[in-house]
Image (tube, rainbow, N blue to C red; front, side, top):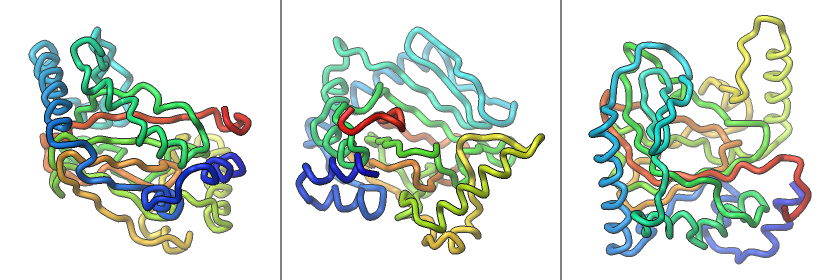
Length: 265
């Protein structure tokens, strides 16, 4: 808490920082110029097409989180029937994506959210192909928080994301550790200490519980292309419902600090 407060004291009190502080999420449309956006989008689409020509998208029948499936270009991982395809950024042939990954505005926002000066960790091209919920549930479509400490993630969307494409869903203000939230965290931790109880670092919450924790309804966030979304994923969030086979293409990165690091590291 003190690390974050110190960081906020040294950033300009702009609307974006206020949104992160108050809501835990900021949505920035038209993040790049039109030409800058097209250059990033075209590099990403070429990379996705190259990979798909070698490793086509397949259906997965096994439930739950799948292991990483490494490839020379990155890796695939499935959540139920949903594919998460992460493609490494190659600076020589993806100079515009490489520049975006170290964008100073993104770095500043991550610092405002976490109190950390270092840039987001390992940005990648991220293709999501939604599975069929009727056959294999995607656990990322349940409301959850990622970990017991703050973590910033960003998605720079290269195509429009409609209500049918699995848009990001977030509970505004749920990144704050209030007394009600702390009591809920303690209760979840106690349950996971029971032998045989399902263990999962990403605690999940039923929508019906939000009001009891003092939180509002989740907010669905469809966005236009060229939109940046940065969120503190200690807050409750999920992948939105989607038509099977629909896709989201983004540049993705995260800042996952060691929670016990001293101020400024």
